[in-house]
Image (cartoon, rainbow, N blue to C red; front, side, top):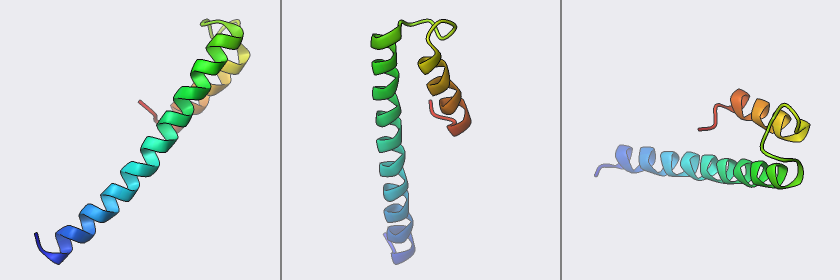
Length: 60
């Protein structure tokens, strides 16, 4: 690989690491909200707020 490819790979690796941390943090928040208030977003306002944030951030 050339220098340009190494730079791109390094940048992508850093971006993927940030996404991975964000996704795992949100996943933990979702699990905690479900344990605390139940699985239905209509009755669990904390879960509904987290799911809205997930939609805005385009998290899978």
